[in-house]
Image (cartoon, rainbow, N blue to C red; front, side, top):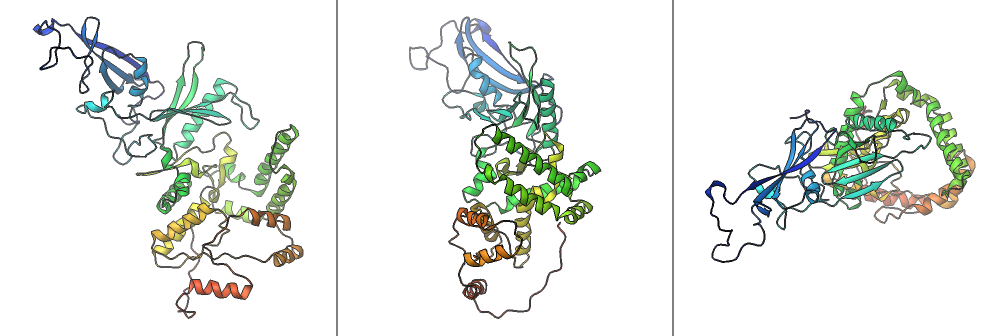
Length: 481
């Protein structure tokens, strides 16, 4: 059935199977509990036989796709109403393309693979005290959409809004956006984005389009795993490889390359600055709006002096039709590999980026892990101002059984002020002071002052067994894999 299921419509219905007490020459006496003279007050937990007018009955609840192919079945006692069983029967719909390498993950915030429902396993088709617990329905709202989480499905409905950079005020525009979102995101997570469906209501003539997705377990979010201290080096490596594969397969064109020029980047920055100023003029409370002018000056200064760099990246084929908005909140680490969701779909130009924009940090740690596994030492030169980045580096070292030595270089305030006053900086002393104040502490790092003491302490940490060492092998420059 792979690839043949029509997810555009999911129909739900039920029917009753009734057996009269005189059928098949059954005894005319009412049912009794063995060894007792009383009748059972309710059905047994291991069967779906109930009581309704006319005798014993069983109700069959069924879901079908747009081609009338059965998707899930639920059997209950006959007197159980249709409406209360809607969510139970819908949540039993398996994903579109079951395969051993990609098991469906139940949305129970535990991330355990779901059991395959076999016909002989009647227990998973029952409801009642002994039935498996179902995940709670949830709602999440963004500035452009409302996402409904029901069972193991997520339904994303576009809002009829006009935000200047996108216009979803018509049903046709929202349908086109849903179709575009599914097509683009299937490049990264084909088994998550199931298709475009419709939401129908008796009081509306035109159905509302929506994106139908497989619900991901929130406990497997990459951001949540990092905050919890879980080892994520293998996940980062898998994400980097997945992105590299998508980038290698991505089509190149003149339109894509044009968005990688310094002029195109400057144009996008200018549009963002103009939008921020417009919101400020409308009286919206915005933090840091007073620094917009300084940030714009620094952006223009940097881009104006980097034309050669961006032209070289275009010439090397580094500008691709990528993800465009990769966040740790949108990466889910499942047992059979990561799922990368929610790429930028409303403006192609914003998705045509240098591949480094999609995978800079993940690629850094993946490269470090590869070299460490080969027995080489690695220097990760970065600001490491975010605790999550420091934890990811620690996990990469633990995974490869390597020692991690964190060396924190702190420049004295008077030296920093003198340097900033004698050369053209990308930031002034006030910006540097604000960044230093906001940076979280790093007690595990080696730091000292003045300069001579800092060098001695750093060398002692890196070379705990003495200052002598064998000649250093200089690795030639390596192109990215």
